[in-house]
Image (tube, rainbow over all chains, first blue to last red; front, side, top):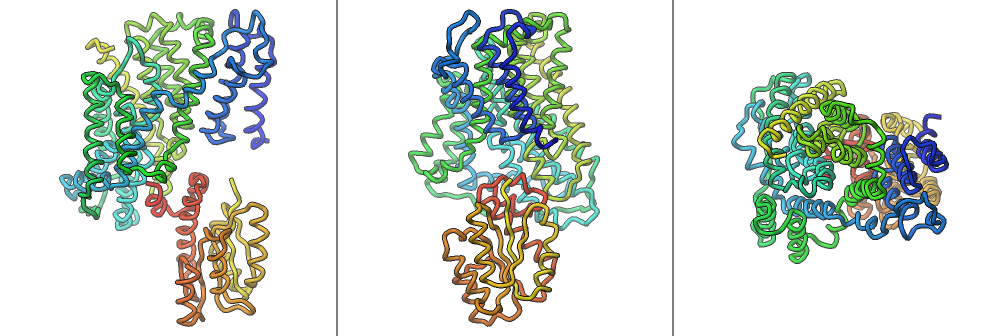
Length: 469
Length: 157
């Protein structure tokens, strides 16, 4: 029965919602289009939580169902005029979610990461950066964490984790059998990868999803994000390091991490180095050159394609599933916003009576909890549109930083869910090494989650004090 | 989750049972099949292929009546349908020439001598299965607990 409910629930629940009369909903003047979006939202939530199908497939399903049911070019019977029909979406807008600027930003990030890996910039940088940390286990761990976090700001957290664990594996093998240090090292990598992702808008998909809602007056540029994201990462990373070296002290007194290889000096490798640096500089400069982060992101795409650094075969290896997963979230947000459902639903619930601090803390905690059990991106996909609408309508939030404060807290919370092997792919990979048990991971993950969340609140408070938000 | 098969081929029943016993930790994720001759193995492969099932690994003995293990593995290496299968030759009686043929023509992935160490066979099988899962684009997360982590780290970066 349990296995079947995983498939039945996501089919039945949305169907029931679709068949209910409008008057049964506790929202005034609900339109048919809005009702369909509610059904789609429930479908998405159930599919992302129960995972009867891959999470990116849910995204594709949302987009196609939106096209069929709530677009101006949908199925004939979905468009029969009626006073209750409501606003239908433009099919072009729905399809455009596949190539939204957010997706382009990520595509640019993917190209940079792929080129860096292909020309071994990542491994070579790791070797050079690790040297100053010496051979004492505690400092080697710090070095590994710093490098992992830095890389995961620009590469996928999963790829970074795999690379660093591959470097670490031969070292873990020489540890004594019952040396707790092994646990610390094996945990340090996924923790640093998860935390590092917070540092830049392209570090992890939830950040990019947040950017989608930070527009107009609330615009946050790439450089601005890093201006508060990177210090946050540094502090949380340092705390995590102290925690890990306190909980799992190494008995070995010397660790020798050997990474072989040399920097490539071929013309193509140099193009990769230059383009990588140039893109990041352009991102950091903000608007001085007139280009925004999305436009800058396409520069490496062009350069690497023209110079054949990324070939036809490499193109096939792009994580389209991640891009589509984000697209589905954007489409869901579009549906909620354009049909007017988000604003209506938020108006129907008396949020005004709650203290704004309760809203911020509650939304962040919910996000943190969800992110521990399901994909961070799917969590952000579900929560962000609602949180954005809530932030927009709640005027009592304004003294605390308004919509931006709420969105940032929820976004950071999404990245802090890392207490179980299933929380994130980096956690799953590290757990597979066989050196960590679930309890040890939970102890560290829960501590860092809570400390990180408190730090997020503090950060938002400071940002509000200095008048940034 | 797609069913992934592992096929063990040996004309001696007791050897087959020993191999299957060594691979027991994999049994909850992979379907382990036993064949007593090359012919039986080929028939099974055809049947599995027709059912859309995957075969990830064949562990074969060499000296068997009718058709030898090296000949079986060579034929599989030349058959497009079965080219992705990983191959272990497990034998004590292969001649020098057989061994050369196994490497050059059957492109075996691993050569194990009888009597073998059970833990070693399991470890090598895990590594080869990891390669198969990643290469075939299957979701490695589904099989994580029986894959070889260091191999996985190298393959997915």
